[in-house]
Image (cartoon, rainbow, N blue to C red; front, side, top):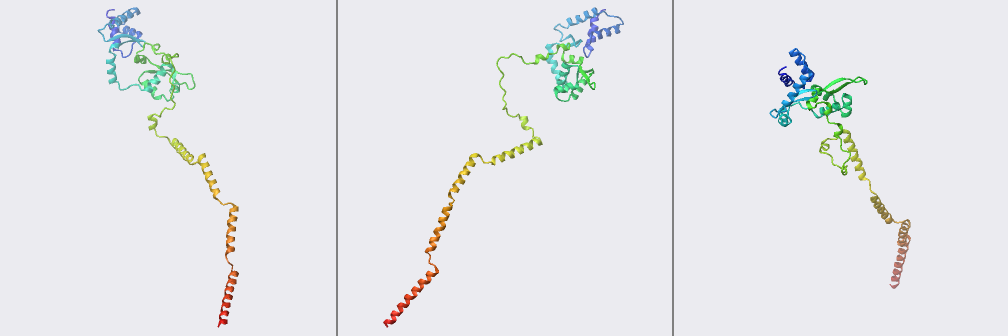
Length: 291
């Protein structure tokens, strides 16, 4: 058939996703109501591959994701990526990419296993990936509850430019090499708190713990140290040395008694006065005798 390559070219050109060999064959047979042999179709497809390898074309005819599609050549990826970046307002979030990577490497995988690996719920990410047709439901598991199993779709391989899932990077490519020259630097455990941690206010429980800790610290500050106790003991000892002993108290008590003995009593006063009066009488008697 004449212009078979051109018909295949037009079918692939208008297709939004990679179109398989079987779909191309069915489309042509229904259009022309005749059977096409596989070698003839393969020859036409090979002519298209060679044709678009020429430098005058900015795109090429490639087999990708189990089908055929026109794609821009690597030399013009920067210009196309700039346009896509400007027009693409719905990008995959980090959470969606993490979920998609788990599905790609673990498929078929239930949502419970995704959440076990990520540690968070994957409901929203799975829903968005289904809307973008990057993943598909492959069936149900035999586990209790028969959860749904998820896997990547053909659009996934088209989105990332993969011919098949075997072209994905192997997990071992992401591991660190076993043999390394030198030793790793020690991890500093006394790192300062990050600015984010400093800005995050403490919770109610944390605030209560901090308050109790501060109270205990203030109480510990009021407890005298061993040196202070020794110093206070020495001061008490010096004070005890200044307190008079029992003998000193008795001696001080006896001294006032001797002083009291030196004070004339009332009888002594009477005797002295009597003696003075007698002397006066004697003096008077003498005077009378003289007269």
